Length: 491
Image (cartoon, helix red, strand yellow):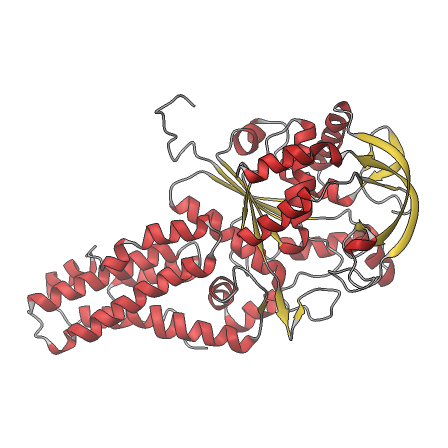
């Protein structure tokens, strides 16, 4: 871009993706966390006037999907299709706004795109085939070195990996150590939070070993994408899955707009797959001569009674059942307000209810009700003028900037905290000025009410990325001037 020229918001495109989950079981609340986080980022940028593309989907080609289907006594295709449909169906109950949903097992864009990426890396001389003897964790779908195990078990799934001997294609990851360090240390690819960045840097600085990028088709039961020109092998699921971020865009103008020339290309992922996204994926793209993502945002885990929420752990919490019981506003709010930026967060329904009642029912909802009840006491044209007010508390005037800053740091607690801080400031103003004690014609009371209405309106606008349904109801209530009804009833 020429010196002195600035991009307009219309050209500063924002591309945000989630990891694509295995479909060996139904979705759980941990999947909801990532989807809601990415949805907030997408909605927030749209609110700021930026063109946005939000991608999610499912990883259909994992061997663990095959294993789960066999255990269930169901045809693999039938099994995968049914579970993938459950993930796609989260859109409505969680109020998601994704623009595209890719399924790696059925989408022709993906199969073609994976083969193309493979050939680009092959042209770079980054593949070779050799025999391999290693320790394989089926849950992680990856090989581990002895030193990476925790007392002989996988640190993620707490089971001993199986010994696997086979011949596979390998990728020359060792070629890219210096270049990856430069990319990460310079901030060309930003990793948030800093603890995860430091973890990745330590891994790269320790030296990178080449890794296996295919599996025998016989072990996979023929499931997966064949290696180009070697049908006896299928592409390793992580190589296959990572590619979805670009294969979903095809070779069209979409790829140019949302990947090659996008201002920001952001991946939202869980901490257990940082290495794949911040090392393997970057090296793959460097080998293929493709642009890199600009940021990798990493969340920690949700736990139930101290254990990570996981399908294999038997403690999965159904997000659709949560929404059916407590409503989407309460579920989204807990995921955004209570979940720690760093460190795992324990989930209980009591915590969800407490947070919704405290912040939404007793906080924001009550503020709007109190304000409109007072405005409705004022007669005629003055009341109409008050309802149209755009006055702001100082905290309200800073709200946009505080939310922008927090979300650029992938800090949803800080972003939702900024909203709560404005609610608290408005409630303090009500208590300090006590406008209900003034005469209906009192100009000082009118000024206070105008500031409160404008602040409530600003809150309703800025709430939209977090609680789109609740924000819409607040805006309608503020505009209608009718008798206030609780937008956020107590649970």
